[in-house]
Image (cartoon, rainbow over all chains, first blue to last red; front, side, top):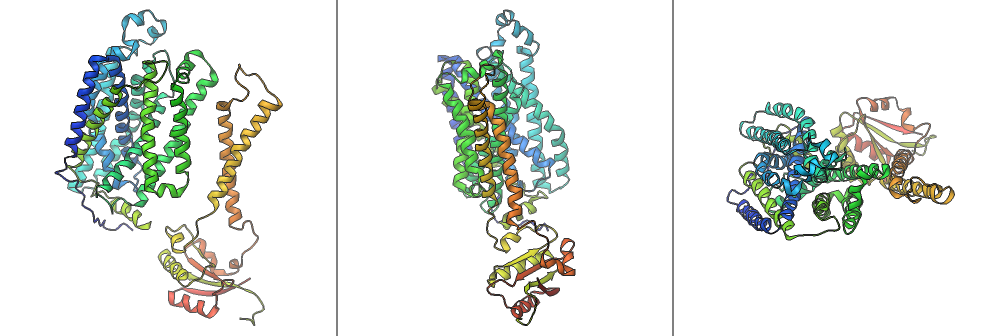
Length: 398
Length: 180
C-alpha cells in the first residue's frame, strides 16, 4: 500500500539561520566564565563540568541507540524524526574533545587516582587493576572511538541515501547496528562506572550501567519531543511530522518513565534490603541533609507525576502536556546526575554553585550549536528512505 | 414483516475486501444507523473511526481494578505486618514501604490484567452459547476471506426494504435476512 511519498514541506533548515552561531556564542561564553571558576574553585569546577558533560553525552549516546533500534527492527513509525538523533550521533567524535577536561581534573574528581591514597587503602588496592589513571584514559578513548565511529557511520550512510536514493544502504545500516548494540550496551555501562560510580570508589552497584542508560534514554525522548516542537514552532515539517508520530514519541517517553522507575527502584531496594554497610552508605548520604529533598523529588517528579499524567491515551496527544512533562523530565535528569555526583563533593547538603549553571550553558551551547550546524546542512528527514511512504501514511490515518 | 413468525435479528451483507467494508461503514453511519456491526477475519486499521465507535470503557475498568490491587496489597500487608503479626526483621520498621513495593506492584498488575480480560468479556457480552448470525452458512467465511456488515432490526431507523436497497447500492456480494 506504500505510495510515492508526497511531502508538502520544505525539508531544508534555513541555511542563513544564525542559530548555530548564537548557540556557539552562548557555549563559549559559558565555558570562559566556567574557566574563571576553575581558578577560584577547581574542585567545584570539575564536578560541575562532569555533571553537565555526562548529561549531554548520555543524550548523545541514547540518540545513537534509538537510531540502531530503528534499523534493526526495520520500524516505520519514526522515519520522519530519525534525522534528529542521527545528527546528535554524528557529532560524538567531536564531542570527545570535551572529555579532556574530565581527564585533566582526574585528581580533583576521583579519589582513586591518588596513588598514596590507594597505597593506604586495602579496598582501593584491590580495585587498582581497573581503577588506575592510564587504563581510565585508554577506556575513554575506546568508548569515544566506538560511539564516534558508529554514530558518524550511521549518519553518513543515511545522508548518502538522501543523495543516491540507493535502498541497499538500509541493509548496510542494519548490519552496522546489530553488532553495535551490544558494544554500546557494554561501553555505556563501563563509562557510567568510570564517570559517576567511581566518584565513590568504595561503593559499587552492578545495576549502575543499566540505571545510567535508563535515565539517559528517558530524557532523550523528552529532548526529542521538545526538539520536534521547536522545529514545528519555527515553521518546519508541520505536515510531515503528524499527530501519530508525536503520540508515538509520547508513548516511548511513557514507557521509559516506567522503565526508569523499575531500574532505579530495583537498585535502591536491593541495597536497602540487604543492608550491607559498604553499599548502603551511598544512599545513606543521599537520604541525609538537604539531599533527601532531591531523592524524594526524583520519585515524585521523575516517575509518579509523569506516569500519572501520561497514563491516559488522550494526554499523549496533547502537545502542551507533552511539552510540560518533557521539560520536567529534562530538569529532573539534570538534578539526578547532580544528585549522583555532587554528594561526593558536599556530603552534608545541596550546595548549588554558579559554576553548575555556567558549565551547563557552556556545554549545552556547544552541544546544540554542533547539532544545528550539521542539521542545517542536510535535509531534515531521510527523504529517500524506503519506509518513508509508510511512515507518512501513518499521519493520514489519524 | 409482521407476517413472519420468527423475530428478525437484522440484515447481513457480504463484501469482498476491507476497503469496501470501511466505505460501507462510513455510509451506514451517515444514514444514521447506530445498531450495526462489522465482521472481518482480521483487524482493519481505521475501521473504528469509520464506524464512529465510542471510546472503549475498558481503560476505566482496568484502572479501577489496578487501584483495587494497589490499595488491597497495601491493606493486606499493613494488616499482616503491622497489626496482626508484627515481626522484627533485621531491625527494619514494621511499616516498611520500600519492601512492600514489589508485592504492591505485582498485585496491581495482576488485578489490572484480570480487569482487562474479564472486562473485555463483559463488554462483549461473553460468554454466550449462540449468536443468530451463526445460522447463516456463508457467515462462516468471516473467519476466512469475506467481510460482513449487519444492521440490526432493533435500530430505530430499521426498515428491511430500505436496508436491502442500501446494501444493493453499496455493492454487496450477497444479502440475507437473519432471524433469531
